[in-house]
Length: 465
Image: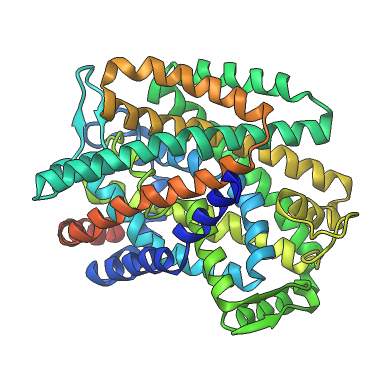
């Protein structure tokens, strides 16, 4: 068996039923432990996210505003997973995978809220006065068993660095190169050099510059993509109810073939659950801990407040953007389409095919442009998370080395075939999640108490609305 085959097999193993049970089980446990407060306060959290205080950082101490911290998180999460990842989940798991994706997002609200809350609670300042936080600091300073906390923290930081260079950088740069090559004929080397130089110039400015760019780019690109997706859905409005019913039926069907508006794909409920949860978590990163690193930089008066602000990222990423992508694919009837070689159309090409059913060639161009914008913002967001993890492992003086390696990895990713990198990155994402989920379970009581103590503030602000 080749190395790539072993890696692919390991990828299937780490994202097997036990991993899905751990992710979903942690979400269920935290939802119950917090008495459904993340669900009950979602509406307030969405309003608070766009409030003037959130956008200006008027409350508390921190490096960036709560809104900017969220946009940096969304920059890392809204990426190729929202376009190509959703399509991959539907091809491998059938239309029912989208239902499981939504379920993982619902439970992910509690996981994302808790991990970001704890990151703010246990954050520290480095010797330059910058806020440093995230699951590695939560594990090190929050867990009562210091030795266990130190081991978990080191493992999480190591896997975060590897994931940032792989899925957060090389894979994204490769997606940009492919999109620009197919649409405009731009050589991969030119794309790689441009991405590497532009990313280095931005990340050299630190969290302030990264957050500033993300606060401008992320909302604009999300609105742009959603408008195009809405046009496609309106074009297939008569088929939409049938597609929704087919998704719900197949999400719980032991083994069934999807037909009609949803296309023609065969998948068991286990496959639907596996791919829906895996791609949902890959997209919104709830439970992985990466979102907690930018959250720790926010200027806020309460760990709970920032936890609520950052958990809205799951809603925007999966409940809104991934849902639009999935519905466009299923309602348009392109799922199960074969290419010239007889293989099923997959990934971004399938999403482009769905958009083209209404928008024509412009649809494919819009999807490619969306990939470029989403993927580049992902590179910026992941760089900050990887840099902080690298700093935790080797100290502040090593940050320059990481930035250089990160820029070089972007160029390498754009110019090389990356099938193995995708599988390895999937594995690193799972390995990141394991220590993070352990710490979330051990510190669930702390998170629940913080949310309960903050609830009077939520009620007061609701009355003052």
